[in-house]
Amino acid sequence: MAKLILTNEVTGLGSAGDVVEVKDGYARNYLLPRGFAVTWTRGGEKQVEQIRAAREARAHKTLEAAQAQAAALAGKPVRLEVKAGKEGRLFGTVRAEAVAGAVEAAGLGAIDKRKVVIPGHIKSTGKYEVSVRLHDEVSAVVNLEVVPAK
Picture 1 (tube, one colour):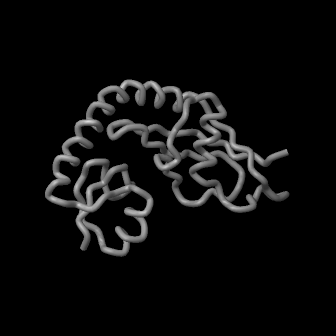
Picture 2 (tube, rainbow, N blue to C red; picture 1 turned 180 degrees about the horizontal axis):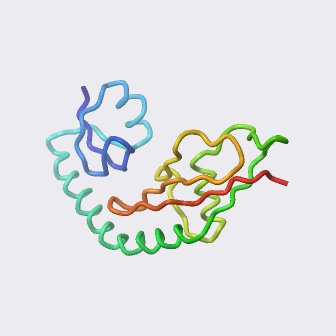
Picture 3 (spheres, one colour; picture 1 turned 135 degrees about the vertical axis):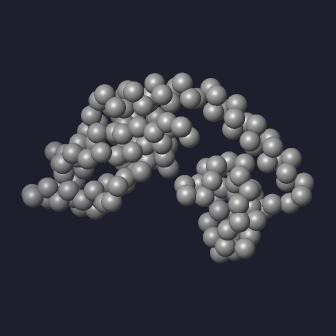
C-alpha cells in the first residue's frame, strides 16, 4: 500500500490535502503521473497543512457562488445536440465533458467535467437528469435534453 497526499480532488478517494493509502498500482499508474497526488513524507505534513488552508480559503469564497450556480442550473434545461440514428439511438454515449460544454454553451457558467455525475449510460435521445457537484456542500441537478444534431 502506498501512502499519498492528494493535490487535487479525486472522486471516491478524497479532496486536496487528504492523506490516503491506496494500492501501489493505482498510485504508480494513475494518481502520480496525472499529478493528482504526491508521495507522503514526514516533511510533507507541512505541505498538507498548506493545501488544506488554501482549500478552506477557496471554499469560503466559492460556497455562495456554488449556491447561485446551483439555483441557475435548476431553473433552466440544457440542450445537447449529438449524432443520432433514425430511431434516436446515439452513435456512442454522452460523456461528462459534453455535458459540461453544453452547460457552458447555455450560458450557465463553466463547470468542471470531473464534477459531472451521469447515472448510467445515455445512449438515446430524450430528457435526463444529471448531477453536478459544485462544492463539498452543494450539488445541483441539470435537466439535460439530448436531441439529434441536424
